[in-house]
Image (spheres, one colour):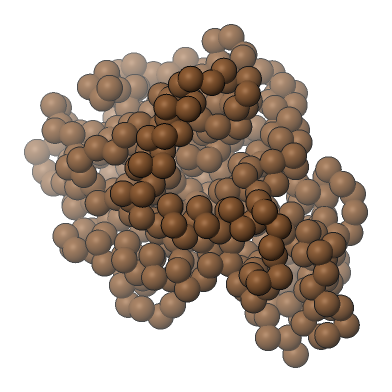
Length: 401
């Protein structure tokens, strides 16, 4: 019996193959979940050493979790990859992986260090042509950190308080999705919630993907205590990767389970109260590109799609092949840049097949950055978080600059 949870449960049915993004590119057994499970078994049972070739196939996994939705045995590829990468950290010594783990330990885990790092990145990004940095955010996305207090609500539809909500700022999301967080605060306040915004800090989602499990557990507990300090009724996380990580605690700490129980996102929380017709509906069609961890982690896409349909004057359609990852996948685009770009190109092809819809909605910082990069040369195309579109539909977007 394997010590890795779920490793012995694979029945080799192959249902995971059609939804695996890396298998769609390479068509090799080492590049699909079934083959990766076979490789893990061989390492666990001592039939093979963790050779560079085996490790490369395992590390090419995006942890997009599409295979989990397809798996009849309920195997968690995220759990397997997290445990495997934790155990074999010393064997993975290539330069990109070492740099990634340093970045997650020394930079992402510390808000102050991250702010200084991104300050330098912001300067460099503004000086260099976009063509030289195709996979990185523009200066408008790399914003300096701001105070944790939410922007004052200038309008409020309800005098009755619907409940207390705290919004997670996060780490990378705090810089590239800061405006969206503040728009969510305005939107929720507008509809009667008492809103606060947490202090900045990492939840450990990126670290758990890279096998830094102890650090991920420590960071998630710090965030949980911070988020619970004001005794909120709802903990709002509009970054799909962070929401998935907080939804699935890494320990039995009661704080982590309390966060998991109260965790939600802005569309799901708004769905609990019912919304009036928007005064400024978004012109359709809108294509919805659900982030992988929203589709296969929290599995909470329905509320987002319903919100988009409610605020859009026209059709809301799913991106063709929506189960296929865009290739951002946390820090994957840094660790596996060539494969990440291939996946991005395939994602753009799916958008083209879907009719080149001018408005694309997606709810995760990495996905926003990736789609902005993919579509930045397409005239008149907007990539937006669903929260941004909702705030615009209710006349709140112009209040946040």
